[in-house]
Image (cartoon, rainbow, N blue to C red; front, side):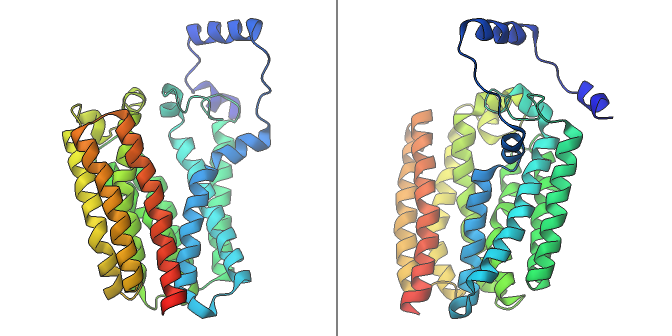
Amino acid sequence: MMKTVAAMEPEVAPLDRFAGLMRTRHAPAVAAPSRFADYFELTKPKIAVMALFTVAVGYVLGAGPAAKFALLVHILFGAGLVAAGGSALNQWLERRIDARMFRTRNRPLPAGRIYPFEALIFGLGLGVAGLLYLLIVAPYPAAIIAAATFVSYVLIYTPMKTATVWNTVVGAVPGALPPVIGWCAARGWDGLPAAFGLFLIIFIWQLPHFLAIAWMYRDDYARGGLRMLPIADPSGSRTALVMVITCSALIPVGILAVGLHVAGPFAAIGCALLGLLFLREAVRFDRARTDRQARRVLRASLLYLPGALGLLLADGFLFR
């Protein structure tokens, strides 16, 4: 069965095979990744760590002084299994796309180190196990939000990446739900407007963040058949406009978070300042649409999110 499925996968081009033989003859041998390393790569650990950080923020802000470290560990374990399962299924669905892209062609599935059937069972097993674990250790709303995250990421966002240039907006929904998982694990359905404030911050943040990545890798994404805004926008004018608008929207979001009782004035001011720094780089990208400036937008995004969430945590525990 597994060999039949594997035979359907794209074969390595003759030139690529010849280049591989030449490297074998004239270059030092490089150890192939272990099976554990390949399965670990299927889980997209870097993305999982960021998602779990936001789960933790949601739980701590929701629980406040009643937060329990042991429960947080259980929640992170369950949510981590769900995130890992979703990532594995994402790579299973996109294995042919990954085989055409330089930045992903050496992933375990397109490289042929793991059979598609194995990745399918692995992803489903992790996702189901994570949801069941959350049902056991946390209030059921946390598992419901986790299931919504899993389904929307795998079955809605992933197929839309080849269907519309606005798939980033759709993908920002499951990307912004992890802090809601943490909040619901602490308080159930209580105080959802505050959880929406966390959702909104991360939802908006993702748009300029991923557009910067899409601009830098637009040629590779086009090679894979993905429909990203920078591919349909060779001049970068629309990409820059969306970046500027979304970065601008992050500035008043901190004030909205005050009204939703997820932040105080300290966090609102701090988030606004971080948003201005983020906006500055987006405006510079509008003036000079280069890969170098897109990378500066990306770096600003990686400063904004942990900075903003850190301010929310500090505000919640030091000033309220």
